[in-house]
Image (cartoon, rainbow, N blue to C red):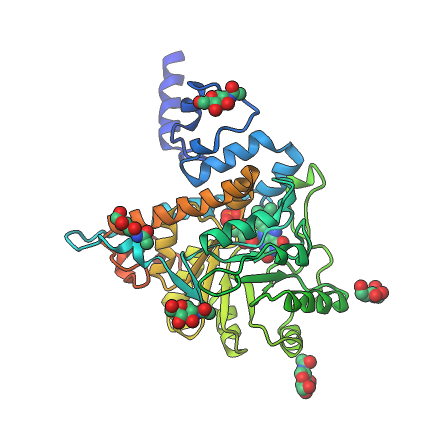
Amino acid sequence: MRSTFLVSGLIASALAAEPFLNEPDTGLEVYLSGTNWTEGSQPLLKDMRGIPDFDFAARQKLDNPKYSFYRTASAGEWSYRNNLDIWSKVKFRARFLTDVTKVNETLTTTILGYNFSSPVFIAPAARAGYGDEKGEVNFVEASGKENTLYVAALYASKTIEEIAAAKVNNTPNGQQVIFQQFYTNANLSVTWDAISRAEKTGAKALVWTIDAPADSTRHRAARYDTTNANSVTSALTWDLYDQIKNRTSLPIIPKGISTLEDAQEAVRRGVKAIYISNHGGRQLDHSPSPLEIAYEIYRNDPEIFTKVEVLADSGVRYGSDVLKLLALGVKAVGMGRSFMYANCYGVEGVQKAIQIMKTEIAHDAAQVGIHDVQNIPVSLLNARALEQTVYLAGN
Ligand SMILES: Cc1cc2nc3c(=O)[nH]c(=O)nc-3n(C[C@H](O)[C@H](O)[C@H](O)COP(=O)(O)O)c2cc1C
Ligand SMILES: *[C@@H]1O[C@H](CO)[C@@H](O)[C@H](O)[C@H]1NC(C)=O
Ligand SMILES: *[C@@H]1O[C@H](CO)[C@@H](O)[C@H](O)[C@H]1NC(C)=O
Ligand SMILES: *[C@@H]1O[C@H](CO)[C@@H](O)[C@H](O)[C@H]1NC(C)=O
Ligand SMILES: *[C@@H]1O[C@H](CO)[C@@H](O)[C@H](O)[C@H]1NC(C)=O
Ligand SMILES: *[C@@H]1O[C@H](CO)[C@@H](O)[C@H](O)[C@H]1NC(C)=O
């Protein structure tokens, strides 16, 4: 009996899906166990080799309420896991014997006409003060040193003015470029005030978060009552977009686009850029990952990628993830949690996370035979797995 049980148990486990790993095992803990590191203390920054390492490190430093606020996603967190898993379904079609020796010089890009050293930016995320007392100032300083884009969150630990005061003046754009994220408040005078403060402090674009029309279901954070930062949101409509447009001359980038139709509507309304996202899986469980959203747009209306600039985030952890989005036409890619975790090491941690992404993009581009990161052919991807589930208009 016992052996029968064992055998059927083995068959069952062989058939079961592999367990989800928040941080794939690349030997961090084994390595640390051979050093003087002790559980519950932060490893040395030099031992952070990949972006997922920062998640492990943040868990050592932050208490459960704070870590859970950063880490939480919606409901069963299926979207959160899909955001991380989806990349493995789309394989690379590497072309060899092409000269890729200068690919590291092609990471520089523009976003709405501003020059940046990398297509990776810091996505807007509330409460950076949990990770380090300097909060968002670390994001400004690290982005300034690396000349990358920072999108500041409205519900930041520092004020709009404190964040702006940390900007440097010696970038390829002159003064450092920051975009300002905002939620529209049910009391619109609060919103108009936030927009005018962002304008006065020199923000170059407004990122309007449209995927938070109500509180979201976040069990992991609800345990500690750190669920939401955005429970006072207004009725979100395209009419409101028109009203905002009347109030400001800054470009307004809708963040949270997750369908072809909303992308098309945004283009009709005259936006200069759209921002594909499922909010890191924090709003609606079973919302699609950015790779699936970008693919839906690519398959139905690929010209959208040339009519407007397309930004994207959610689940990006590796240089190769960035290349997959760029191959579909995405212009720049944001990361949320990873920079919040990196901020537990202060400005050096944030800077190292930016550098890791730059290095990985250059390395991976070379590995797949891309000599220009700004011109990646879609044939880089075998997207048959996405083709099986993609929404096609008219079908
Ligand atoms: C702790 C935290 C706070 C966030 N706060 C905001 C916010 O205030 N406004 C917003 O538009 N998005 C917010 N986001 C979503 C991020 O902008 C981004 O879409 C998401 O983190 C991307 O997924 P990733 O964490 O897997 O990179 C937040 C994300 C996190 C992790
Ligand atoms: C652990 O060792 C490193 C050098 O490898 C040293 O810099 C660090 O201070 C040590 N930490 C502790 C807690 O002893
Ligand atoms: C690209 O790599 C080469 C060779 O490793 C190096 O000399 C050069 O400085 C790098 N350029 C950039 C922009 O990083
Ligand atoms: C970006 O760089 C180009 C080329 O160096 C330059 O002509 C342009 O003025 C820069 N853009 C901004 C906004 O500074
Ligand atoms: C809306 O916000 C403004 C500015 O903060 C405030 O003066 C006003 O009392 C608020 N109105 C309501 C109805 O809460
Ligand atoms: C925008 O401003 C124009 C001109 O002042 C006005 O006619 C229009 O009704 C306004 N639209 C909205 C949605 O506020």
